[in-house]
Image (cartoon, rainbow, N blue to C red; front, side):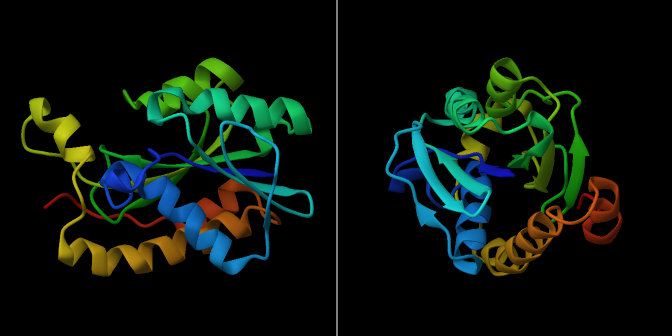
Length: 185
């Protein structure tokens, strides 16, 4: 399987809402003994057995380029790709799962759809949304609040459990066991 976290490289973005996918990959890497590959796939790629963990370094809007390079080189079926990303349409702390479907305006997903099709699995991590649509860009590129950061550790641990469960369970079973529904405040 290929586990991909969507985000933006560089320290300036490391704690932003848009980088929650990178944070989830970091949590996964703390749990497994994956080794960094030396090949350049326009991202940080780690390998453990037949599984791969990727943080594209192409910036969010071009994430699919990095994902496609890994998929093609290692001949990974698109149905075995798991993309972990932030989702504005879910309340902060919600975790949902799906395969295929629309991109909800998420530029990282648009790029993945363009380069590998829509048939990959997704772990959607709710980040909430700003009051006004005009604030979306600044909102996703802002850091989590201190209260959110405390809860985020638990959420990322939960997401890592769910991602690893996908190795031996169907998406439906994982969704049934690991989905977290939160209502908007």
